[in-house]
Image (cartoon, rainbow, N blue to C red; front, side, top):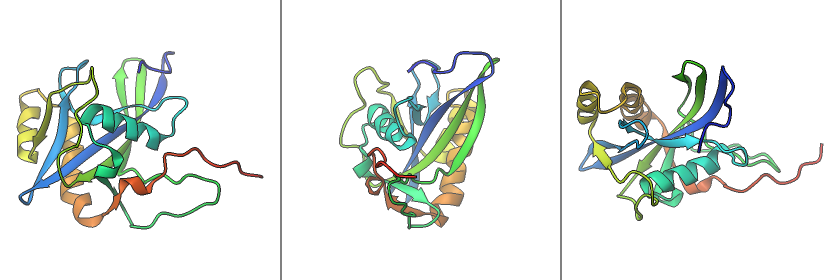
Length: 186
């Protein structure tokens, strides 16, 4: 999807999906070769004007990695979501950041952390990068040093694996709804 906001100084809202899988007790992180930038990145993309952030997560993860939400757990600070009548509750991102894309454009990014128990049941969507890699943190750092991976991808994955994975609860990602909110009377 092209940028929604194209005037100087504007921000697009985006999501990132950081997926970790334990392979014989070793954390491996999922990256793919971004077609436009030619570097290894996490999955993610723009939040469309007609989507919730969680709906964007669902379609970007499926398109770029082959995972459906029912194959993943999302890391949460507690295992319990607050319920609000008429509202759709989304999981809490592990990070939110704003970064510069060009001299006049920015992305404000909601970053979610996922745990996968096995490889995805499907392949990435047609037209998406097929260069999907599962790397250890050391391997990812080496790719950053060679200029093949973006540095912030390593920094975020390092925090997720070393800090959040041991402390947060892995909640089935399919526990969170993709539905639109119900009508509410005010």
